[in-house]
Length: 367
Image (cartoon, rainbow, N blue to C red; front, side, top):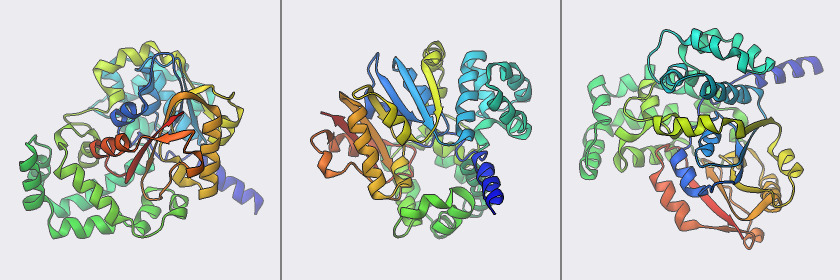
């Protein structure tokens, strides 16, 4: 039994859960307000948010993830900035069509650690398809794109969704064209707790989630489609098309490529629990914390302990940013004097977020 459990655990370690970051990086950077010379700690995930922090001239970005598969994603993307031109990186990601992804990967192999090289060598199909589609979460969206969305809208209606419109016209299009009965019914079915836990996200993610799931996500998506400009939304474009059409996330934009590439040696990654990395950090040594939605994976007391560790490791004047999707997590009230929530900023930025699956965005200042 022990060997079986160990084998299952090792297999789970090799699953890419997120091949991309599904949080709006522009919102994250606005919340953190990274300054030149800052030391940043960032949840690794798909890697883009950690890479984008380099564009702000951070002195060091420490990307942390428990999963070796997520570290392999970050390491390959970092190698892409070192060894590829901007357009080639987009090809490797799958952001644009390409027939040379295997050749692009071959150019990067020697830049990778042996473990990461072995990881990607074993996944030629993921390389050929574009590494941005290699995660469970992205495959989940691919199922929605191929099998569910065509039952709701035809290609013309889908294309029309991503045409630029003034605010009143966006609301009118959503109400009269997009928001039909099939949309509401099939969305609630596909994004239900049961289906997401089986096909999209690790079931452990829902351990601390209470109440319904699909209705809350639908409310956030409605905001992104009716109130924000879908023509400028790379996240929803990937869901609908499996690629970026008229917009790119921050790390992949041409204007940010050189600044990330030139500072790529300031990025380091650690495969470890974030609690361990925080415990090992010197007091007052970290300026900015991108915590993604990591707190939702913890019980409330565990979440509070991580906030305690941030309060110890954080430098006064720094900032902490994190998202809530389905489980409510925020810094404990007893840390209010040390981690002061900037609530109006968090709400304002949350309302601007184009990655629309999250129910709240929190920014706190270390005071």
